[in-house]
Length: 449
Image (cartoon, rainbow, N blue to C red):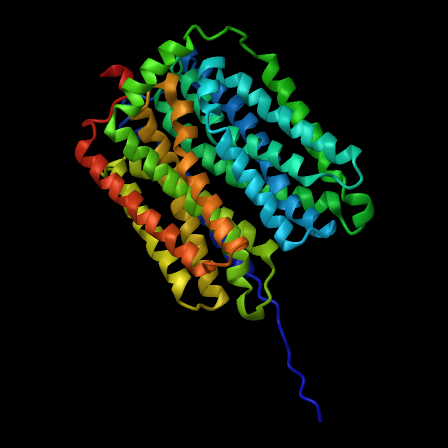
């Protein structure tokens, strides 16, 4: 008599989604918006003050464009993996494509400098244009050359990492209310995470059950959304050229960026965070399905992004408390480091792993706006894009190294890569501790010192 072994596919409970939603709602609804220390005389959102109205109007305009850009990034992220499987791309070829992508990102690490010289809105327009190029390329070719698309998408992702943040900071410095800037930082993380979840829903709906007809639908959607973004951004486009020359920019960069040890600490923390995030998204699925375990990855993905949304809602509470931003980030980095250390070397059940993954992303939701706030304190606005893009270069180089060692030479294991990411997070926590000792007190924008 044969033995029947029943297998079940793990999926998160519906109560998890409800908990995350209610937690975000309560965190936002209970926040005392009129008790902010950054703005003792905050006006009501319905005030007739022209500065208030203009600032809020620009914030809504920016967040709409940023959310649209996040949807574009999310569509290629979710749909791209499915597309590789559909066209039969092997694991070895997938590793090669990843190496090409991160190599391109490393090669154009100077894009932030270009954006500072040319203007942020021009680079943001380039972001949408690159997505249109990829979408058209995939529409007109029956079997697209993925390395071309990968290079373009890597450039777009690099632009996304610094251009929108730099643009909103520069615009706020032109007369918008500065107290709204901190609010915009955490809303960027919140809306980005929500948009990534939305992109997953859109991608599944577009592809549908008929793969032959639906495989090209996401490309059409990307083209349409990117065109909308270009039109919406061009409507209020300010074509005023930048007055700074490259020679002046170089002198300022050497003085205010390379000559400031505190910015080196910020750059190191940003690089360590970027490396850990990329490592996580590369290895989270293999970690979950280890030993042949079956899970619905598509149902876990929104849980992780929901946790990031929840983490971002903690930021406005902390900036109104007596804790320094450096302390909050350092604690979050330490928590992340311990979580990755446990994930690397301790076998866990799927439910425990998903809980650890969610805590990791909740910390990301807190860290991202906090680092943006610290950059506003220490980094001149005119040099911000160059500082961010160059700080990501060491992380991209490290990612290239571990991908080659793991994907080609098989000299390191997944657990070792995760352990490296954990070590980097502990280093980032140390950077925040030193930055607190060297930092400014009280918090002020660098222009006001």
